[in-house]
Length: 306
Image 1 (cartoon, one colour):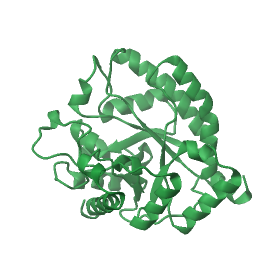
Image 2: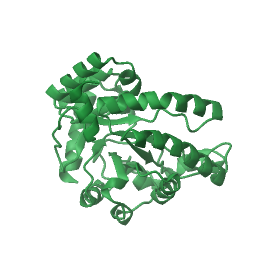
Image 3: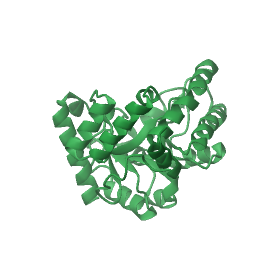
């Protein structure tokens, strides 16, 4: 690690300088995979710069394998293009058997060190809202124990962990045992984990389908929210029948009260990355340039009008 990279990491900021927070002080975050685009880390950065996004997903495997020289070249390119990091995914398999968890946890410190070296500061994952094998309390204990270990490694390196709950009723009853599917339950899990760097990865879709409210958001502090996903819901479908894999671009239908959602986040002072994750077949069928333009247009519309 050279002096410039060390100073950036030590300061707890991106090694890229400051990307422009375009709207509401929130970063417009591009997640290529979320809109069905296959892209390398370099390609994602180019897409972000071309279409006006402030931040991109960090590919943990790619960053782990870079030499110091290769990483410096990447960071220089990002700085020139005014693109910073959004989030990385949690590379620990905490949902399955002990062997899978142990193997991925053993590799995690080296991966987190690579994220820190690159200036990545946020990691997120989602909580499955039902289980085939584990009743609620057993599953809760397993999640809190395993995520506490992962969060501790992240905290030692100055990174935060955001947990996303999955709200649709159709997902809650997909397996034998229901599990966490609301903000309140997720906050209970965060409290049980007991690590200061753990918070929420908020999604307007899950906020809506879980029946959460403006007051629930206003009860949070800025530091409680690690990242935000912004989506809309298909029209004409009762909330209890909404399906997680069938969403819409932000502000496309008006079913989700994006204005209230964003205003509450702005009021508590959230200033992190906001991305689109619509799981929308029509968007996935678009050529990359068309999908990227549709995504940035919808994201800007929601943030400007919300």
